[in-house]
Length: 354
Ligand code: PHE
Image (cartoon, rainbow, N blue to C red; front, side):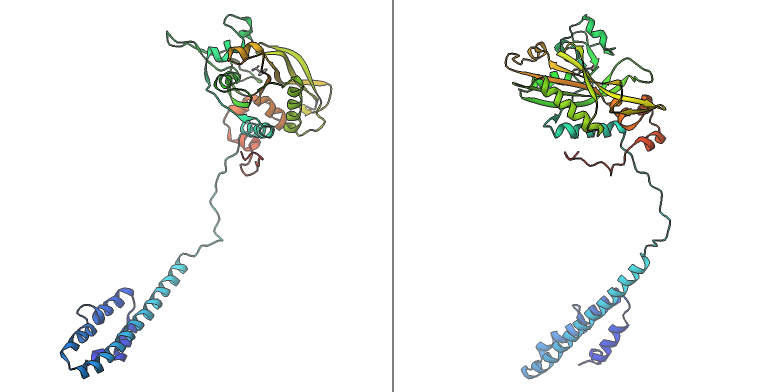
């Protein structure tokens, strides 16, 4: 056997290998196709049976030894590499952190989530509709024919339709989604509709774009008593005041009969509004039993079905709940304002999972 296949010599060489590449070179040197040990193995065929047996055994032992030594050294080199990597990647936890900016939830969104949450627990589902509506859905179907004085209740942005098309409007309220739902589905219907609405109006308490939430319930048996119970429960929960003082005041809407507005009591001390009790009243929402004419306009049999509807401004509800005094702040996109009045996304928890 050649001296270069001496165990000590092999162990020495492997021990000196300082990288995986060097180790691979050694493996090829001994065990590659033309490697030393491989050639010795090949030459066995030239020997007599006796010699073959003896030398074969030695070579096999040597091969096992080589495999073993190579593997041991490979593990050592790899462990050293890992240790070095860990050392070089060490994180310095004492370094100052980079500033990062967390967004805030706008009070309008917060109110919408909260209102949805309350009505969802009463079995209402959420619907939506387009901001640009047909004249029919926004007015005519809701019992406000064209040229009727009731149209003047809402300062409307009209968008002329194409010559052969019906006129379009920026919806003045969320009520057209009632019409869409009644035309698209059969009673029982139990929906709420949050969304943007538009009126040609602008001062400290009006903005041309604002938000409403609409409710509609149609079935065979619901009455004004259900309407009252539903809205009283809602307002108590929204303002988190159990003994909230409220009143229903007769009113007029073309699409409901009878109609009412709901007021809540408040007091004002040092320019701070206190909701819930007192002898001043704040108008908070409009409501009523759906006018049978509206049901008929939406192909619902008014002899069989009845129900109620309500609508309210989300800006006003938010101003009262969160103590915001000027409505224009809602839409100024001022970071200082949203930082002050906004809500952390991590704080909102909802039973309906919204
Ligand atoms: N749509 C009405 C408004 O914007 C509110 C309302 C909705 C009143 C539903 C009664 C019933 O003034």
